Image (cartoon, rainbow, N blue to C red; front, side, top):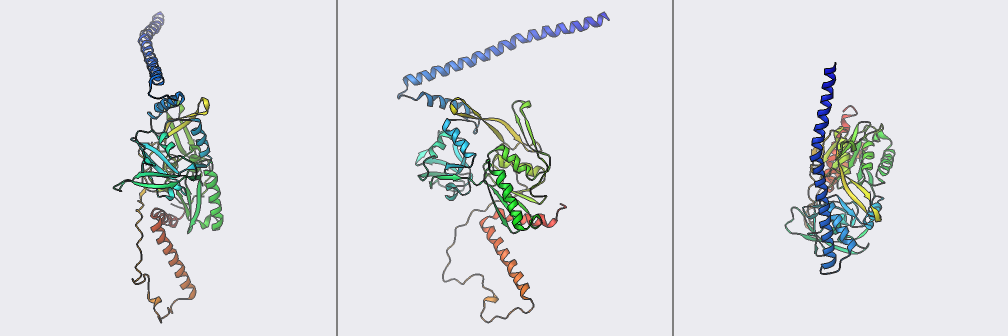
Length: 444
């Protein structure tokens, strides 16, 4: 017994000695790291004093410090930044759905300002700005060398004022100028309409209003159609949706899921990770769902598309999404400013991160470029003439008036569908997919 006791004691003593021997170099290494940090901070102080005392012009010390802070944050990734008190106030206004500006969501890519997406119904949208455009100049001044906040500041201005931005677009040989009049941007988070028997929910952003707009819009459309049995399904249009609030993305996903994980976030420390699950209840009551995405669908849009795709609750069509799979936390700072810091990555229910990869659609459908309108030749023969247009043509004696009326109604629907393919090929394709899904019935 004594031997066993001694062995145990010996093991304990050796463990203590080993820990003590390892602790010394670890403490020395930590002390060396701290010393290096303090030396770098001293260097920063020296440079700051030299600039303040010897720069060719007098500098605003507050602006200098803010620039240093912002430089530190923007060196981390494109989405971390410092927000001045004014910028922080603007952000709070934007999440409520109304602000002044052009109506574009931008990011920075290798020093260039890139359009994530134009927002529906805004001056930028009306001017033809597209997702993927690069903005090189504002009113003739180059944006090269500026950080994203500085570039955005150059694009801001009073409502009603004009701005000329120079755009570089893939497939266009030369940059071109676009004139835009700044306006108050009033975001309608969800626009609802019915195409045939399909409810189309166009979600433009994820702000405080999104889920409420979606819930009420879908309910009104179902009621107007005569009940859920008269609805074939739902198209959730997330194209050119730059994202927004994570909480709203979770609620919109939950609106169509009965159970299971929606999204998880994983930060630097495993214990900081979060998992968000769906609750019972499906606003579409099991009807088929088609989700539309494109390269302008980012962040919160990708959470929704990824969740519905992983649960096989929806067919996702369009083109690959933007690929912003990171979570930013806005932290208030002294002086009413704020810091936007990337604190986690998010993962779809299957555990995949879409950071830099995006959500891949189940069916890839490109949106053809708009073809230029061709002026009609006044001397040309009119198109669409048929036997029925000829003077004195015989009547069809094999069909009743009701049958003829039904044929004409079906033909009118087909012509509307053909026009939609010209106006919005991706949406028309989504509606065709919906017809196929609804034809299969509830047992899919």
